[in-house]
Image (tube, rainbow, N blue to C red; front, top):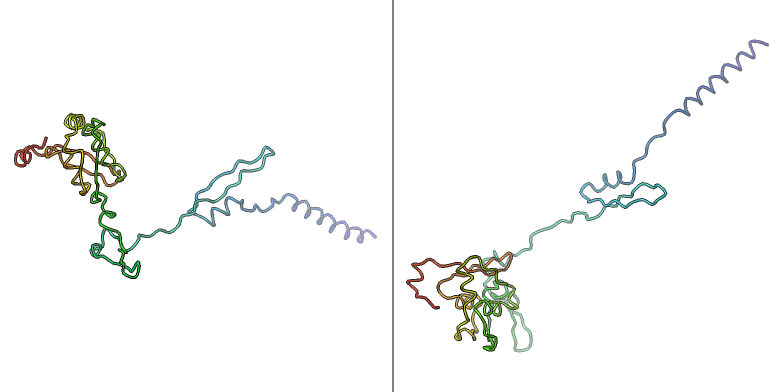
Length: 207
């Protein structure tokens, strides 16, 4: 009888020890949602949403995924054939241009027709700002004493009416031969710089 009891006790003790060892094993850790998103979208920006007051972890949402970009072709500013005019039929006897015009590609070439009311008693600065209205360009602040003096001078009566003429030419006429026009195509501003004195003497001063 003793051998029979011994053979039953040993397997039972072994089973208890085995179950106790399994209880102490750590469960395998699953990747969090943010880790899975980071693996799926390595280039995505991440926005953390705060958890609620019950202690839930913050949720990470992938946003702003990079989109492929490419240069637009053909480039009207690099294409040597940009000056070639393409037309399409707009009616039975009418043809319309199917490409951007020179004035649209180069805003300084757009035609202006300025008429400044004499009742404004305008200064040169007023005339410049009036001319630049709706052209896409704005007048920069005076960068020195010569520019301040130019801006403060009364606008000559001969400049109350200008055009039709290209914008670049109107801006040159309004400032006179003592200044040259400097255009910033990025900020789209117009500034003035004093010309070389020798050039002023050759061309004469327009006042």
